[in-house]
Image 1 (cartoon, rainbow, N blue to C red):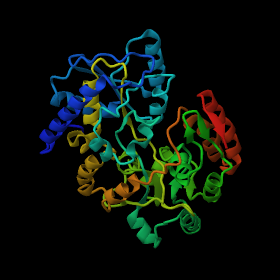
Image 2 (image 1 turned 180 degrees about the horizontal axis):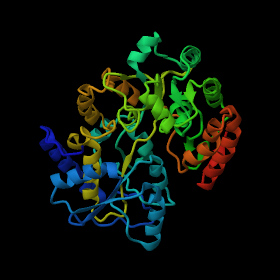
Image 3 (image 1 turned 180 degrees about the vertical axis):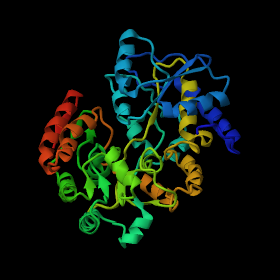
Image 4 (image 1 turned 135 degrees about the vertical axis):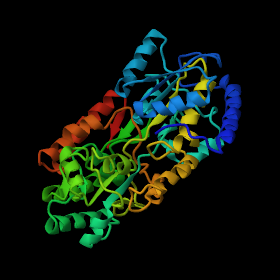
Length: 441
């Protein structure tokens, strides 16, 4: 699915990248890079480039290699969960760093650009301003200490996926606020028990609800300070909204990826579900998941929280490309990262919503012709792309372990979210402090 498709824009793209590289090479001597303790290496355009990727992006890197046979590169598929440990090992041994890394975890940008790792090269002078502008605010999480340290591959903005014919059959209107969402959940529980409007038994409860609300769990104050406050009204209102729906069964206590929820999907009993932009193709469509038939699923804007200026969403994923400050062929490494993040040759066939604006526009054609959807979801996805709540940012600590041990565990055991927030505060503050943050409330 990642085959390199010739486009009329390839020649222009190649010329553009060549120009960028010329600028990059000239700028290298002035580039401080991410490794404060490392001398800037001299650039060798013939040096072999080591690329680390996940299996999903592997075909994209291979397409780059096919289109650029003169670039010497070695592509390795790695376990992203071991990335930080391996970089620390290379720092101790003084060798082994990959030149380009794709990571599914946006938090890695914060960790690997820190003085603890000193891995990432600053891309400020290596990526043209025009290209940087093409990302809009998508690279916000890639900007560390005022420097552009990575390039975003895709966005995972939330929308409200729904079963269009079922909504019409039941005579329901799409909720535009979370108050309306709660009211609909109470109505569904009373009128159509067994149908659900969401599933919250996973870390998606953070991405879909807490993040969109602006609950301060990863609110970065500075490189050394974060705000975590589960007593904030923007956190407690999530519990107030969801707890009654979990109690009446209109929001499942299981994960969206749990077999029990998949069974509801196959039975056409998922009326709607807040979820990332990739839920349509990867949760609702596959036969091994919900297996929804053609012409059923559509996307609506995520509801708005009361008092907010817009209908903010969270983001469940959104991978990044990083370039090593230790690379002996920085220009070549930047060329690869740029191609993967911006080239229509790759991004139009990519499985997820491209972060680079022009690539997203080209990618839209695939969705427009996809008969799986009852309506073309791209306009809704595009509108949501600029509404990921900026209150939360990548941090050096991950949310998942503390969230799973507290909020998710409470949901699955039949307890309320409200009863778990104090424990979440304690665990999250603890892990934040172990990664060097002072925690304020």
